[in-house]
Image (tube, rainbow, N blue to C red; front, side, top):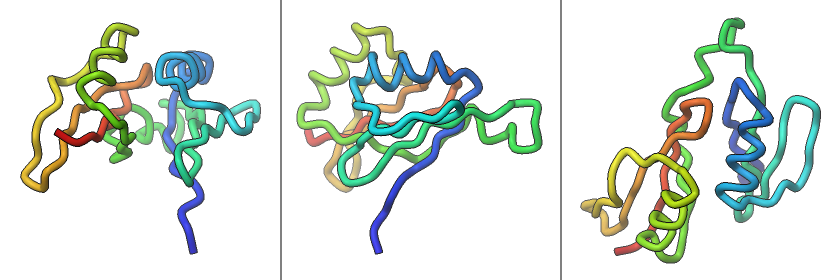
Length: 117
C-alpha cells in the first residue's frame, strides 16, 4: 500500500492553478474541469473545486495538514514571500528538530512548509 494523493478543496480553481503551479512551482501531472493533480514527491496533491455554499463547503479554507518539504526553508520562505505568499510567521524550530512555516492558499487553506534548521 502506498499513498496516492492528498485532496485540497478550493472555491476558485483558476486562482488555485496559478498559486500551486506558478507561485509554488508544482508541476501539473493531470487536469480535469474541476481538479488538477500536482506531482509532489511520491504522491499527488489534488486541488479540487468545492462550492463553499454546498453540502461539503466546510472543506474550503481550513488547516489541511499538508507539509511541503524543502531543502532550505529560509530560502524557500524568502522566495515564496517575494512571490506574494502570505505566511503566518517566520519559520520556527520544532521540538522534534524540524522547522515549520504555515501559509494560506487563495481559498484560505493553510499549508505548511517543512525544512531543517
